[in-house]
Length: 365
Ligand SMILES: Cc1cc2nc3c(=O)[nH]c(=O)nc-3n(C[C@H](O)[C@H](O)[C@H](O)COP(=O)(O)OP(=O)(O)OC[C@H]3O[C@@H](n4cnc5c(N)ncnc54)[C@H](O)[C@@H]3O)c2cc1C
Figure (cartoon, rainbow, N blue to C red):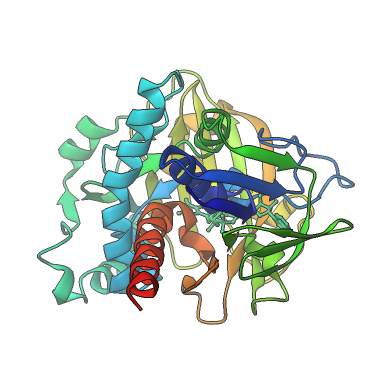
């Protein structure tokens, strides 16, 4: 059994803590948040930092994200789908009653006037021939097939089904990973200033020693890593009676807008992508553009009620790629950018395997 200290209780921190404690290790997690719950947000004065994982729509879209990322991200993401399913099944079997994972594929949509832009995106999704044997290709749907799958969508949309894509209920998953890992020692309200091999330096309290120190502070790992935050905004709608089974994404020359259905007649509409570290509330322009796009895709959202708006920062490195660093006594994972939910389980699996191999090599040295 190793003594493991984790800085950060976001997507990576909670998943690592849950897995490592189940593997029999003694795990302590430090995070400045007040507790495991999603924070309440809203007023202009309340824009303290909290995990980007709470704000995320939780889309697991390895095929669609080929529009923004390379084949390695798609491969890791495709592997993560089965891993998230296992995590969700275990949490549900052990008492979580909220649905945590849904897999019905997703839809890419385009209005007729944007067909040219849509075709360019589809071409990017198909430019990775090495992936052809590993990931399914987008399947075009005709009007009848689309109406049968998702009757709430506006007629006349061009549509492609991305088979196998899924979603995690991000807020409920983060909560379940924390409260269903009772052997973990959660230290809320504690900020880690610096992480070194085997040491977490707590703000105002000094160093705490562990066998393994893990740094998964997201944007909070600045300046130890050359990170930047990329602002993203989402809007939560309540629309009883509007049927939507799967996430949909509108292809548009200017925006990447998606609508993700959530239990309780809720819909997450997102997300802007702004090169800014401003955490203040959602701007009028983003709200208008996201909601107009959403209503153009699902006209019956017109009577939806706006229940919540939220902005947060995606942790990104200069190349927008995830970065894992493992050395004896230290693991850092960061830079998950717009793919944190998509990539976390595969990255965690690879990082823990790398650490185990390193330990074996040291033991034989
Ligand atoms: C609007 C939006 C939509 C998104 N949609 C998706 C999506 O659909 N699919 C997807 O895959 N990804 C999505 N993402 C990206 C995803 O949320 C991130 O990539 C992911 O949250 C990164 O995980 P993380 O654990 O590295 O960081 P985070 O989830 O941000 O967690 C970092 C944690 O570290 C803590 N911390 C910070 N500083 C310190 C410190 N000094 N000491 C200790 N702890 C500290 C924070 O409080 C936080 O709890 C979205 C992000 C945004 C903003």
